[in-house]
Image (tube, rainbow, N blue to C red):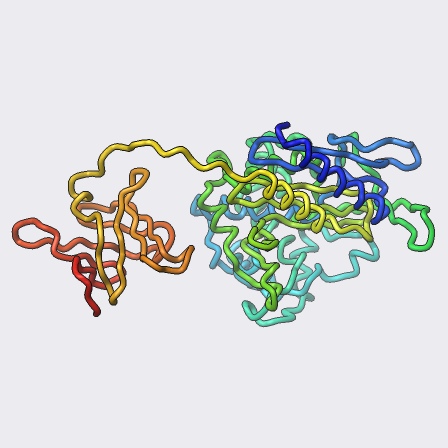
Length: 440
């Protein structure tokens, strides 16, 4: 671990204060930067009756953080051409009485009711796979699809059924084979494996605790079944930041982190991507998810720009704020560990035909500068809005490029040559670019 001692002290202080003030039987947390574990701490009792102290290897239920795993399985299948996010649920589950698109289900904008029909959080009896699908006949479309963000455990349970049917196995088996094994997440499991924390309810008017029930989510496991450790979640967070070609490409994880539904419309501090919760803390944006199950609260956040994140697990089902604690820990680490500047080094000269495109161009009275950096063509709109000012291109053929990242993603850049072979003008997204200042 390479975090400065002062940062260690700050992180220790955050966790100790949370454990004490929120009366958590135990809390286990880690801070990471990519694959590097910067700090970890485990405080309190994983088993109150047995006086068993929590350790960094103690498992806790992670609740809805499970949804990030389910979402990755869905996007894997999308990238493999097995499905589209525009597909209706009924393409894969034809007997479903509801037919939202998979993309809206991932973003909690399908309008489906929150829970599977029935009182599962009172009876603690979750539906089987067959009962889950049959229950869609009783499920309400509580909002028009796409009209509003509305959290739906039902939607993610059904996404798990989609994964199972497309892969031809159970959701648990698909997850193990396609995600957990390739990433080496040996302590992330559908059922508890020792050492594992007991979940508690802390009495509001005394310091006594009661053991919570430990429900099996049955056929709805994709919404929140998993157990894990902070160390495994740190590895998962590193994956969400950078990707792993064995599981999911970095470009797809970037797509998952795009805002699909805004939750906090006033301050824009909370939104949803494709299966990922998106948090804004000051100038820092994090992806991840919170989780809650009887006797357990959990959180994972990671800033994809710096790959710095935090995981927090507790064995209290009420009164804790693990998402706030995880954001506090990760933000403290980002501020204490400024990213070093990348060293510059010379590169090969651009291809001869690309060399002729470099420099200043003008369109709509605005200047655009074309450059060749890191082996590809880029175009920067001078004075443009940060984040919307630069296009990055890949070559499609002679004198033809496509923007694959940044401004005008997907649009074509076409080179027009004069009779003598010189470059006369460019067309980008059908707009003409000239070497001299010009309007339309």
